[in-house]
Length: 278
Image (cartoon, rainbow, N blue to C red; front, side, top):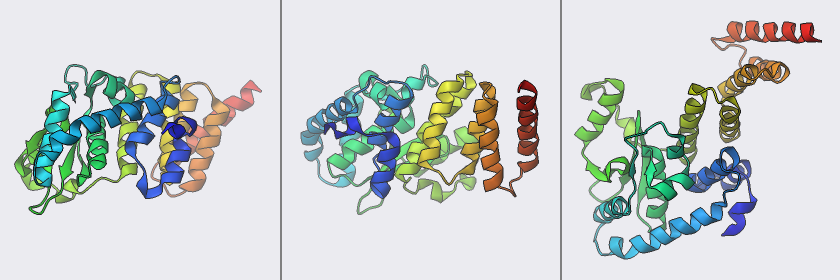
C-alpha cells in the first residue's frame, strides 16, 4: 500500500495506462502541488476504511441501482457534501482535503464515490456534464444517475437537462446525449487540474498555476495549448528565457494554429527584451 508514497504523478500516469485511478493520481498531484508533507498512503487507508464501513450497508440491498443509492446515502450521512458556501476554495479540489473536511466540488466528491464503488464491485462511472460532474450506476434497466455534490440525490434525465441548462443556458432541446457517456480517467483528472489552474490564475498565484499546468502537460502531452499557456505563466513571473523557449515549442508543434501570429509576436518581444537585458 505504501508504494504510492514512493512514486510521482507522472510515473503513475505513465504506468497505469487505461487503468489509471483518478483517486490515486489525485493524491499524488495534491502532494506535488500544494501538500508536500502529505503521505498518500494515509488517504488510501482512510478511503479503505470508508469502503469497509459501507460494505455491509450496500450489501443489504439487491440490485446495482439500489446498492448505488445506498452508497450515496452512506457517504452523505458520513458528512460528504458539496461546498456551497465557498465553492471556489481550492481545498475542494484536493482529495486529501475532501477526505478530511467532507467538503468538495462535484468532481472531487464523485471521484471518492467512484473509488469506493469500484472497491465494492459496483458498475459505476463518472459523467462529465458541462459545468457539473455526476456519477452513473449501470443496471439491467439502464443507467442510474446520482449527484454526490447534493447529498447523493437521484437524478432523472430531466434533472440532468436542468443542471446543464443552469450552467450553459441551453434548453432541454439542446441537450447532447453524449454528455451522459462515461468520462475516461484521464479526462476526469484533466478536469480536476483545470479547475485548480483556473483558480490559481484568477488569484495570480503563478507558481502554483505553473505546478498544476506542468501536471496537465504530463497527463495530456498531446495538448499543445498547455505548452503555450505554460509559456505565458513563465512570462508573468518574469522568466523570459523559459517563456520564449516554451512558445517556440508551441509554434513548432502548431504552425497552423489560429493564434500563431499573436504567439509569434509575443515570443519576438520577449527575445528583444532578453537581448536588451544582455
